[in-house]
Structure formats: structure tokens, C-alpha cells
Image (cartoon, rainbow, N blue to C red):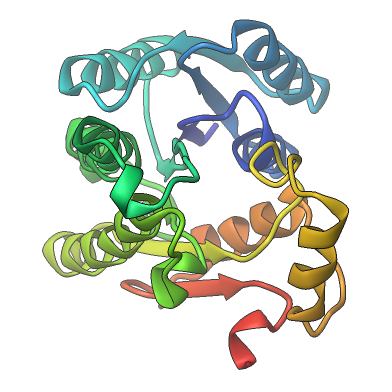
Length: 244
């Protein structure tokens, strides 16, 4: 059976991606950093689809932890076919108040982790006989295009992730496809703290008139996983917000 590894899959988009892969017949390596109980719930959802799940605690911004995560997944299932780099953190703060250490931490988690996990997974992906070819999908953000005055480090990290995606796509072709998804506003922990006024303002800029769901992003990831002639691309999933 094919195997997928999804970083940051204890909740939100990562959990939805893990469950979608299970529904499509994949065993799943579930990763978390601090949310052990939520990760166990994701694993239970995977098993409800009749697929295997293993839960691995790892801070994927650390290269050694990322390698340990990949090794644990391969030890459990014997192979690795697809990687989804979803781990990420956010922080709302203007530049004049932004501590350089916080800037570095966001970059570490949002960019370096994708590099670390992909590098560790590379030999296993090269050995995969997945049809279509094995793949890596990086979860970026609409802010990679629009920027964000109150979270320059988050927006910058998501923009960097798009460049990593293209570079790895060129590097690993034709054996491994590498793509990205760039969600717009999605109902997750990151948007849960919006005030009614903030939500109204944001929704006014989304032609579809509502926030996306984690399952909407999971559907896009599943498409890229199976799209045999697509690599180096970013699939924007934002309800038309970028048309403005």
C-alpha cells in the first residue's frame, strides 16, 4: 500500500490532508510537535478508513528530528511515496515590534522544515514505485503573493516556499514531482481569533463569499498528488480572492 507523510497533521489542513489520503487508500505518517491528543485523533480518523497510521512527535525545523520522523515512518510501513510539508506557525506583529528571533523561528518552521523533511525523504521517494511518480506538496499561502503588513515573516516564509518548490521540481524531475498549494482564508486555528468585523472585511474580498474548509485544501493536495504531468506549479485555492 502507498504511504504518505504529512507534517503538522494533528489538526486543521494537515489533519484534513491525512484523512483524505487515508480515504484514497494510503497509510499515513501523522506528525505533531506539541498536540499529542489531536494527533491521536487524526490517526484514529485515518484508521477509520481502514488504513494504517503511525504518530511521530518531531520538530521538523530541526534536521535531526526531521530525519527521525522520516525514518520512523519508513520503519513502520517499509516505504514512502508522498510527502506533504504542511507544518507552519504564524504570528501577528508589525515589523517595528518584531523580534529577530521570532522572525527566524517562523522561517525555521515554515521553510527550513520543508527542506529538512524533503531532503530526508528523498532517497525513499526515489526508491518508490508509485504510479504516478512520487511527489512532494508544500503548503504555502495566498500571502506569498499579497504580502501582509502585520506578519511579514509569515508572508515572506510562504513566498520562499514557492521558490523552494520550483527549485526542487527542477532538481528532482523526472523522478519526483514537487508542487505547492496556496490557500486563502481557511477555517482553522489561525483564523479562529478573527473578530466579526475582521471576518466581514475579509469575506467582502472573497468572491465566493465564505472561508474555505481544510477539506478544500486537502482536495487540491490530492489532485497534485495524482497529476502526473504537473510539477513546479502552485495551485491557488482561495475562493477567487486573487482576482481582485
